[in-house]
Amino acid sequence: MAGKGYSLTQGERITRRSFLKKAAGFGIVILVAETAGGAIVSLAGCAKPAADIVVTSSTDFNHSHNVTIPGADIGSPPASKTYTSDGATHQHAITLVQADFEAVKKGQVVTKTSTAAGTTPHTHTFAIMKA
Image (cartoon, rainbow, N blue to C red; front, side):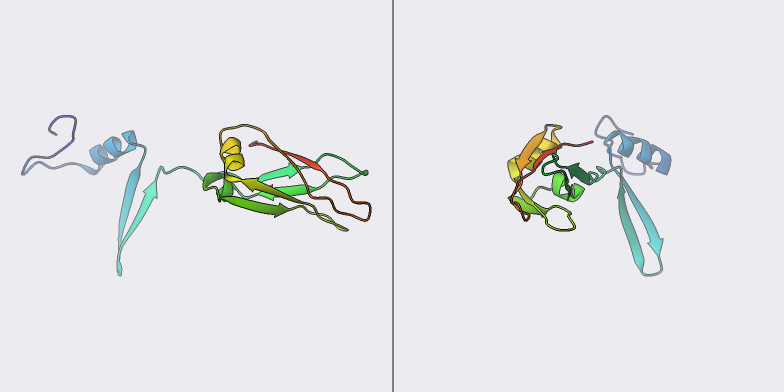
């Protein structure tokens, strides 16, 4: 192989093993498999999607709620998104903006107060962070 650029001169061959070693150094491996209908291309070594975050609220009026923030929203944040809590008799909502998603992605804690709901209107506080 010629130099650090890993270019090949005419007639020079690269083995699958040496290609994979070099590609792994870049953190990405492209896998190609031949099929009857053509080739299937797969990227290996790409970033693993973030796990969903389940957040339990503060306990107010003798109960709490859970909200699930999908990992896909942390990995690729929308401009803003509203999530609704669980609850048999009532639910609460919290809204996250892009800056909130970015803060959670960086490992920071984002605290949100829910909308008021229930027969006795009340709110809950949600502290959102990666596990």
